Amino acid sequence: MPSSVNLSRFDLVTLRLFVTAVDGGSLSAGARRFGISVAAASKRMADLEAHVGMALLLRGKKGVVPTAAGQALLEQAIRVIAEVERLALTLDDYRRGAGGSLRIWANPSAFAGFLPALLARFLVGHPSVKVDLEETLSQEAVRAVVAGTTEVAIVGENTPLEGLASFVCDVDELVLLLPAQHALARRTTVSLREAAALDFVGLNRSTSLMRQIAALAGSVGCALKVRVQVRNFDAVCRMVSAGIGAAIVPRAAGAPHVRSMGLALVQLDGIPVSRRLLLATRDPASLSPAARAFVELARQRLSEGA
Image 1: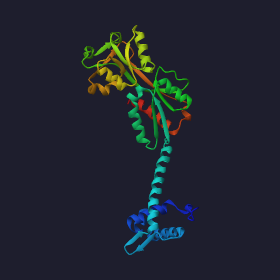
Image 2: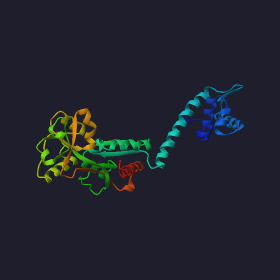
Image 3: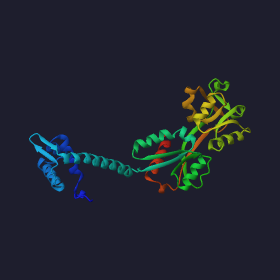
Image 4: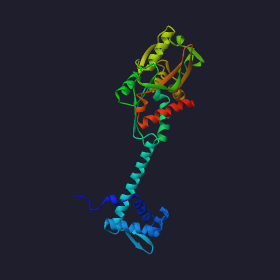
């Protein structure tokens, strides 16, 4: 059954005035809050009561109190005002270039390195954006962007990009990860050829990192003996800590675990040791406001040297 009350006649100023008057116990409190005269506030309340066809406020010498209908209106008005304020925040996000949702597929190096801090910084500036993160292989992330499953991919630099736009979003150093008590842990540098005599722990061979490491080893005429493969850097660090083998990891992936797991990071000598990650998207002009804002923040972070 349709309501006999025409909701289009309600306005937010009157609802806010009503809530303020009830909270303050007087129409003068509402009038002061909105910078109008008490007579104007009283006229608005009288018009509201005439519109709904019932008394909403009991007026007395000590001020005003809501009737039963007024109490019901008060509770609903508070909810309506809160929803409108949330809507205003969401629209403000869009005005500033971000709102809605954002999907990011990234490789393990990004998750273990710069991505958490960058995402935290992004969410502070865009609190209304919902983010869906997926940790995956670099090539899977690229395919997801091409297919339209995600807008942003963060991948190793040696990943075929299938025509996507990209830029370098992070640069880290590859280091040798060892148990702290290992003889080589006391060295300042170790050559990759010397390290190749060790057993190794690594990520899946199909990851961009392991393909990069294999190429580096091949460039100096050796191959690494990877005895154990795991899914993430936390597991790599735990295996190395247990003495199962050494590992080559981005410094950002190993450094947080050095003290807690009894590990050491040693520089690799004689090979290019930088590990660059790329942020890849389809046509930047077609990105959602949230994705555009995230991409720009990633560019800004690198230019700041963060």
